[in-house]
Image (tube, rainbow over all chains, first blue to last red; front, side):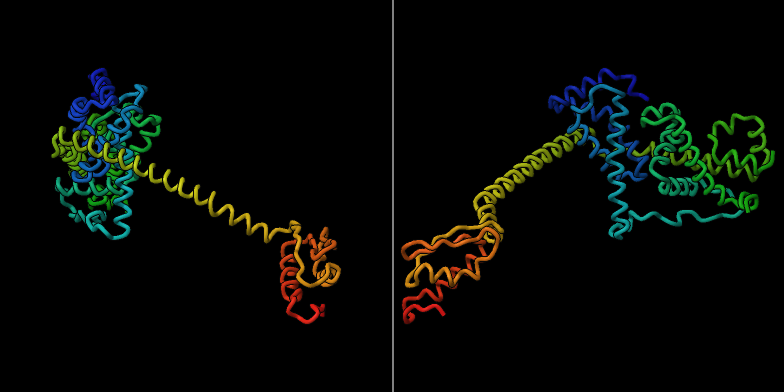
Length: 195
Length: 184
């Protein structure tokens, strides 16, 4: 959690944003853009969508700067705004996919082809995990991303999400089990062990 | 431990933990099949993490900030316009309600209502007692009555529908053009 390195500066910047200081807002965006974008990537798994989410998150930051009262971490507040935007976007994409308006929004069903006996190649494994992660419930996906892909400790993630540490661990366990099972199933040896 | 047990551990434990445990590490290094599976998971998770980390926003922060400020301001204006429009619609509705809807509703209610209405009617050729005889079968509801007074008048207290009937009856029969203005 890098926000703890510069909490005073970030909060001061936000205070200046509240009184309508564009330069302060620009500085704030410079400070957090990559992090917000990375969080957005975890939700959308697509850089174009993440770009939209990050942009919209900063619109919300500008609009709601006054709602941050300094209680809790600034990073947590920012994460929750990003999360809200990403979930809204996810719902919109799902609706579009249901209506068949956007073929690109549909989940790819066969990104991976089983290679019996052989080692799964890296790109295929990445594609498979990406596809599996896309199909996870949002909570599991974000916890998997924050813990296993971004390397945060479950305790820190619990604090960031305002959840119980046990809940975070349980979701992480389910996410890993779901993703890894899919990878393991592609190996003939595992399939033999689990008929 | 068997391959199945190690793989069960691998299916939910952190990779680092699996690698730290010496017996698990020894197994995964020694068993070619399990080693492939561990490598797949490691490669996949590390690869996905790296690809997500490497993806960077292509929009410069200053542009993001400018666009965000512009969008926020535009939305604020839009919100104010929407509120203004809503207030305007409410005012128009209120004025319409006060001027048109409420009086119309009152009139309608007066017609439909069961309240008694009192009205004095001028007679053109009938005497008031003749008119009384004529209208008496139609003025039957509770509290209704008619009053015969000197002169060409009759005062009727009745419900609105009864009163309407009385008026139409008198208009039809209290007609000086009819011979002797006789009551049928």
